[in-house]
Amino acid sequence: MAEKLENCSRLCIHTMTTKPWTLREAIDGYVQEGVPAITVWRQHLEPFGPKEAGKMLRDSGLQVVSLCRGGFFPATSGTAREAARNDNRRAIDEAAEIGAPLIVLVCGAAPGIPLPEARQQIIDGIAAVLPHAQAAGVKLAIEPLHPMYADTRSAVNTLEQANNMVVALGSKMVGVTVDVYHVWWDANLEGEIRRAGESIFSFHVCDWRTPTRDFLNDRGLMGEGCIEIRKIRAWVERAGFRGPIEVEIFSDELWSQDQALLVRRIKNAYLRHV
Image (cartoon, rainbow, N blue to C red; front, top):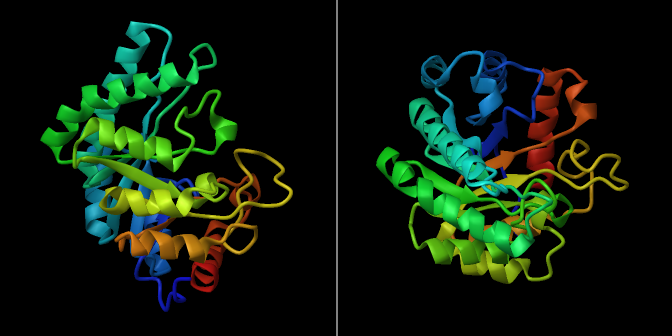
C-alpha cells in the first residue's frame, strides 16, 4: 500500500472533471485553489483555438500534463479510417501548440467490426500517425477502457491488450494510461502494471459508485466507491511511475454543482483516499 499523500504537488485535474467551466474558467479556478497541473480536453480548446489556449496555459503557470483525446481508429471503410488518422494528426498538432507532451488515446470500436480486427486497425492507425507524433515530440498513450465500452468506445479493454500493442508498435513514443475506473476489476492488473514499467505515461483516478446509475456519467470522487485506489497507486509507483496523478471524473451530479466547491472537494478526496 502506498503511503498517504502529504500535499497536492502531484495533483492534476482534467477539464472534463469541471466540464461546465470554459478553459479560461478552469485555468483560473485551478490556480485559485493551488492545483498545479491540468489535462485539457479538445472540446475545451475549440472556443479559443490551440494558439490562444496555449498562451493562456503558459501564462497561468499550470503544468499541462496531456491532451484528451485521440483515437477512435476502427471504421468499416478505408475513407473513415483515414479521416480518423487525420483527426489524430490534428490532435498531435494541438498538443504541441498548447505544450502538452502526451495525447491519451481512447482507441475506438465499431459494432460491425470483430474485436480482433478492431484491435489490428488500432495498431495500424497508431503506426500511421506515429511519425507525425515523433516529429512533434508528442507521446501517445493507449488507454484501456472497461469492457462495457467494447461496443463503440474501445476494443482495448485490458492493460494486457494495451501492453501487447505497445510491444507490437515498438516505439518509446507509445505507452499506456492506467485509469483505475477502467482496470480495477482485472485479476492480472498488478502483473501487467509491473510489465508496463516505464511505458506507463499517465495515471488517472476517480471511483466506481455502487450502484452505478449511468455507465458513462456517474463516476465518484475518490473514496465514494469500491476501487482500492491507493493499492493501485502503489503498484504504479513500484513500476517506476512518479508523474502527476490525474483526476478524471464524468458525473452529471457533480457537473450540476458549484465547480469551485468541487475543486476543493477533489483536493480533500485526493489527500484522504489517493
